[in-house]
Image 1: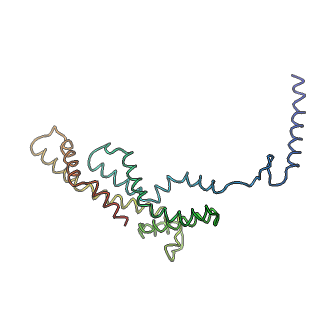
Image 2: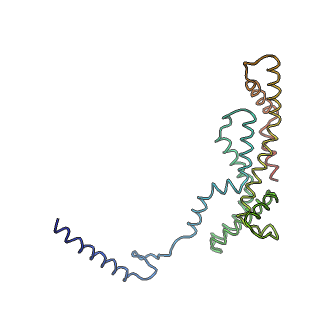
Image 3: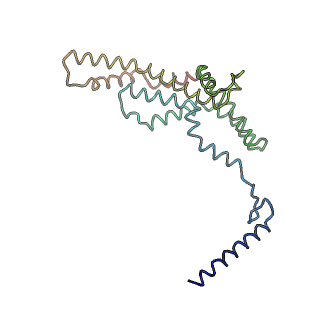
Length: 244
C-alpha cells in the first residue's frame, strides 16, 4: 500500500508531462490523430436538426392540424368512440397533408436543396430560401386578424408587404387560423347528426321507451346516413377544395 501511494504522484506527473508534450507537438487546428479540429460537416448538422424538428413543422406549418381536428369532430359526431382509430385518422391526415404540401416541397427542393447539394450556397442561405415557399403557403391561409394579433404581441412594426413578416409571427398565426377553420368545419359537421340525436331522443321519450338510451338507436342511423351520402368522399373533397 505504501509503494502504491508513493507511485501515484509519479504516475500523475508523468501523464501530465506526456500530455503537455503531445499538445506542444500537435500543429494548431489539428487533433492528435492528424484530423482537422474544425472539419465538422455542417450539412449533416443542419439535416439532423431538421429531422428533430419534423414533428413540429408538420404540426404547426402544414394543414395537418385542420384535417386532424375535423376528423376527430366527425368521429365524435357519429358517436363511434374508437372507429376509425386514432392511428387511422392520423395516417389519413398525414397522407392528405403530403398531397397538399407536395408543390411546396418541390419548390423547396428546387430553390434550396439542389443548390445546397451542388455547393452553390451554404446551409443558412438554403434555410432562408426554404422558408420563402413555406411563408407564402402559410400566409395564404392565415387570417389578417391573427397576424395582427401576433404582430402586436411581438411589438414588431407593421410590415409593408407579406414577405416582410417574420416566421416567428407567421407560424403561430397560421396555427391559430387552422384551429379556427377546423372548429368551424367540425361545428358544421355536428349539426345534421345533432338533429338526428334530438329527433331520436324525442321519439323514444314520447313512446315511453325510458329504459332504452337514445344513442343506441341514433348511432346506427347516423352511420347509415353517412354511408348513404358517401360522407368520406364529400368530406375529403370539401377539405381539399378549401386549400385550393
